[in-house]
Amino acid sequence: MEKEKAYKLLAAQENISNKEAKSLIDRGLVYVGAKKLMIARGNIGVKTVFKIQKIEKAKIIFENDDLIVVDKPAFINSDEIVRQFGKVKLLHRLDRETSGVLMLVKNEEFQEKAIQEFKRDRVYKEYTAWVDGLVAEGFEINKPIVTNKRGNKAYSKVDNFGKPACTEVFVEAISGKKSKLKCIIHNGRTHQIRVHLQSAGLHIIGDEQYGGRRYSRVMLHARKVTLLGLTFEAKEPALFKHFEA
Image (cartoon, rainbow, N blue to C red; front, top):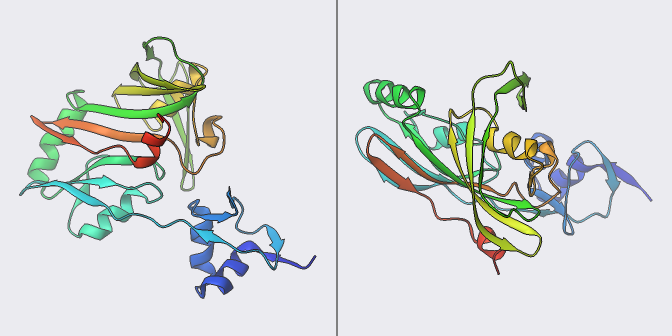
């Protein structure tokens, strides 16, 4: 069977540049049948037909003179959201495949006030996560986390020499052999929920980096944030509701 680099075939199929094709694959947006294409430079049959998952647009949840709050879709980096809205800065970040509440600040005065709230752990941050396995009751994970960055990739782990991190876990639903969890985080370390759940023997569905099984996306959603008396909520994606059926 004649083969070619996956990104080159995709570029030809979609009439886009090789760079654009590689980016689509790297972002987890390209499928062959029901399987996500993982390696852009891998060889694949020249008759392969690709399917590209569309990215939803970020929806504004709230806006005033100080900030814009959006419902970030999965498969887009937080920095890309900033570019969509112009002269704003990120107050915090969400991982590429994590959806939900993302706050963008418009001025330095409000930014400084908000940063102080984060530092004093006075920002309420609530997430929804679907994990494999049956979780009988809620629990708390209070374990320090250390993060290493290589290029554009970060990897975190529980480590006694890391920075303090606490995650409260509550069971919201059980469907088959899967559990829906509400996770409230304190401190807000890189990949905190993903790493803490992994340390408890639980893996978020779709989170292959931390031991989860392959799925169309990482099943983690930032559902609610409260900052300086303002509360922002982003509805769970339809895919999350599907698991409860």
